[in-house]
Amino acid sequence: MKFHFNSSDTKDALGAKDVFVKKYGQNNVDKADIIIPIGGDGFLLRNLHKYNELNKPFFGINYGSIGFLMNPQTDQNLEKIIKASQVTILNPLQMQAFDKKNKSFASIAYNEVSLMRQTHQAAKINIKINDIERMKKLICDGVLVSTAAGSTAYNLSAHGSIMPLDSNLLALTPISAFRPRRWRGALLKQQTKIELSVIDFKDRPASVTADNSEFRNIQAVVIKSSKKNFCKILFNSNYSMEERILKEQFYS
Image (cartoon, rainbow, N blue to C red; front, side):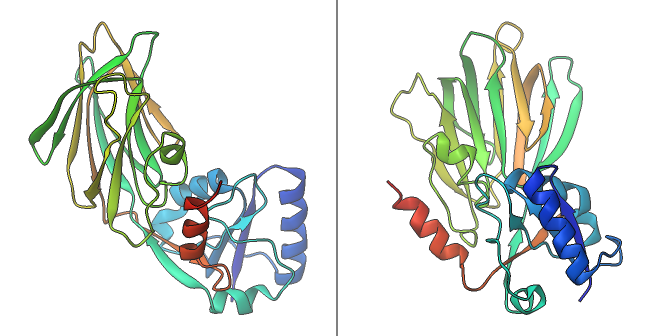
């Protein structure tokens, strides 16, 4: 089994990479069987964006602060753990955005796409689901669309629902909603087309972020799940993702 180790620039992650390379060797990423990011969830995301076209599985090892999508640190044989690992497919969101000059931008997101106010004024957002208007005007700091993989990240901080990775759902979650104040968002089928239009976008500018790619002065965003650019994530069978999701939901 050929590994490609890649680490964040923290002291602990760099030290762990040196240990793994000495023990298992280092292969060029295009020749490796498994890509092993060493760091936190954010570092794993950067690797997914960078290497998704290689169609290779990822086995992340947590040397970050959260590491919800990472595997725990271990001294056990890495080949044995990976051979017994559970495989999860991550389908990203495909986003197309249009700015105030009608210029188009496209990006993918494995965690979430978030549309946010750009100034001190609240954003006013119109929401269409599969071409049908479902909310005429949401007044808020912003709104996000999250994949199941991203549901424990920004989505959870915005009081959105946690979703199992195999749920085939998307979370549409408001960020600090002012009107309607009691709206908590919606869970949608993965195939759903979501359109977010910024009302008064010239006077109330908004920006959109797809994972770590940001575009400003946006008037409209179209979001839907994509079967392209999917990634295979491996999880240690002794630390199932199902158990981690359950623990997160009952964490106090």
